[in-house]
Length: 80
Image (cartoon, rainbow, N blue to C red; front, side, top):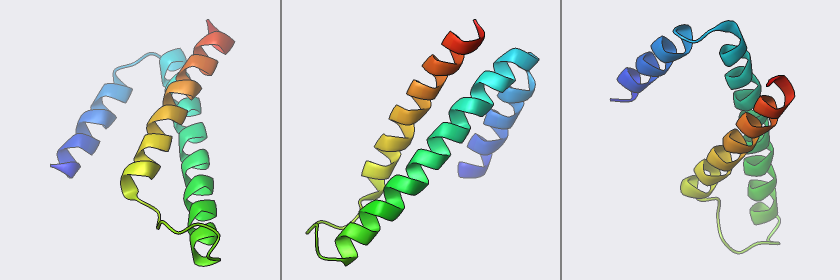
């Protein structure tokens, strides 16, 4: 199922024009960067006993989705 989702996303992105591809690329770059930083900081805070809860994958996915949406809005504003 995950493989099929990756292929469907790849086919979708290949069907877009160059501007739309660039907008998605910038949004994905922001989303990946923020998610990695969030996950690393969250994990470090938990291991340093500053936070009691461990990193939950759904929390990281929430941050990924929100930052992707913000990235799309920023890129649309920048290019359109």
